[in-house]
Length: 78
Image 1 (cartoon, rainbow, N blue to C red):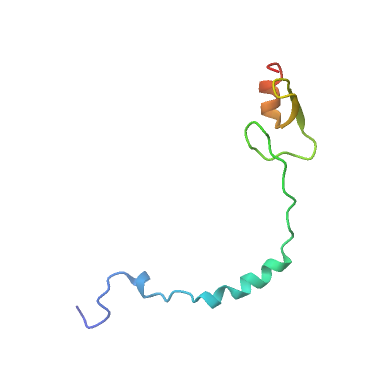
Image 2 (cartoon, one colour):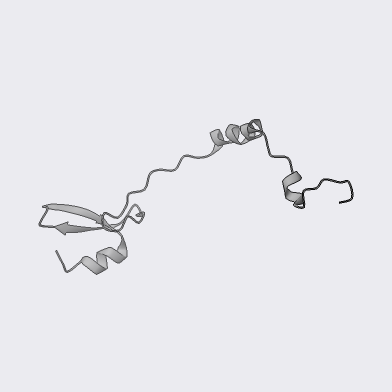
């Protein structure tokens, strides 16, 4: 070649960031608002809103939290 770097891929010459370069991001994580864990639909696992449906599971003698699609789908099966 012309005496320059013999590597044909220019991206391989980009220096990789050192692990210490991530420290500023770690410091910013302290300002991120923590999210409240969502309740999940007990039938499909989808996250639920604060106001959500419940279905009766007579075979287990309990109520289960349900998303709207599952509540509609399984409303008549209990």
